[in-house]
Image (cartoon, rainbow, N blue to C red; front, top):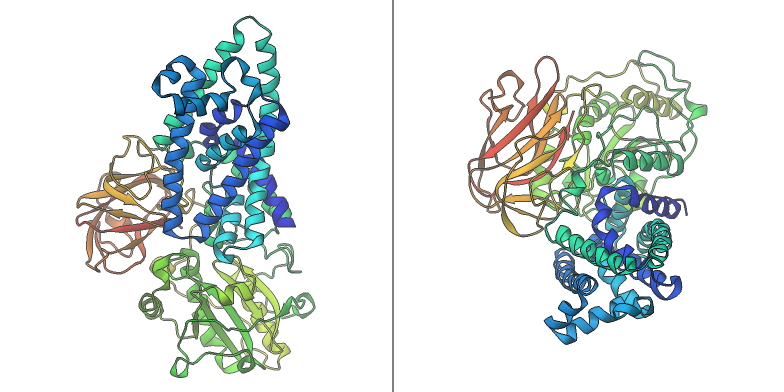
Length: 613
């Protein structure tokens, strides 16, 4: 119920986002219609169609995306005819009588515009719903992630309907205001005709904007800070103060990837006011570690690594041990920066009845590849057991929603504590020490580990970060600045504006942008990003046939020098040899705002997501 309320409120805020603008002319064209016969059917058709399309896009795979594209073309054509019929009915009639008849029925046949049938209004709403692409704010991110992870279910469909209903409510309020304005102008001689023509111009402008990609490109790049902050406040108030959600990295366009929440989730009794200091050597946490539930079974993994003969680990094998169950995925920077602490804890307490179980649950499709996971486990020197949870079976059993997430289980199999996001390491180690003491294995050392992490695993400089996680694939892309916006699944040439604002980015060269990643079709293409952070990372993959792709990185048009990342040299040279996260920049000295560019010398490069630290 809380999620339904959150989804409804998030939808209501959609009208404040600039990327709702292209569909407003279609909605306002019904201002003069009766509520039950005109406005209500149109809003219902719009909301239900959006919910259906979003459900298919979340759970149906690439075929659903292609089907939606064809539906968008049909909707654009129908609404273009509708706009022409509003603007010049006689010209529309001269084009072709059958098609114009549809347009005239939608408009109510010229002078009798108030007589639109409910079915015509519903059809107009369905067409509008096909084109509706609201800004991917934090709340919509939670809704779409839930749909993607849980599959086609009643809950995910209800969440999308609630979101769409919230948007329809705010649009209905706009319709009410527009209706009163329409009625007032009709009382003036000739004003009604000019208003109808003005709406026709607006509808055609909306069609042009959507056809040009402005709804998902240029308009999505406009400031959404106000609505995003309102949505984040709603999430904290209604969905638990667990810091910034990391589920699917939560698609928040204005997010600064805050990966180190100051407090544990609100349903834990250890809040920000009672965290232990890093040098506190007392245990004393027992009374403040309530039982949060029994640890679920670890069934459903497609593969286990780092166990004898790669055999699964059952819940009964963990009885009598303190266990940390850790959800991660290998291209997630927040997860990568947590791994040094997990390795250190596993080594420090392994002889005292403590074990770490890693649960690798993928975000991107390439993270389901077992060879990629095996390679990542070796690269990160992980020696504790890892369950490959490619089907989200263990994820759902824990009702988890975050990357990374850690669940601390006592020797009796009870979950006693959890940590969402990176950070708060000292307190997490105190929890381990407390649970070991309860099990009769008091730690010989009450100190906390301080691992010497290198490269991408080093802790972020959060005080300097002003750039947030940014996806390149069109499913969650934001702040895209290349002219014409993103054209999904179509090879086309892109260019980068001469001036980029902070956190804007663009593509250069010929690319095909898919749902998860963009693929370079020809050599000598690149990506430009205006950022402010110490570290810049980019998840990259080689060509589809596995060929390595060479690249060169520049900062403000120059070689990075001492500010090069772990995966580049001082001249900015590097190569993509595997699909993983690459650290491309680590600023030396004072952190400032800069323009980053990566240029690929070979075709086939695949770019997924930027992260910062």
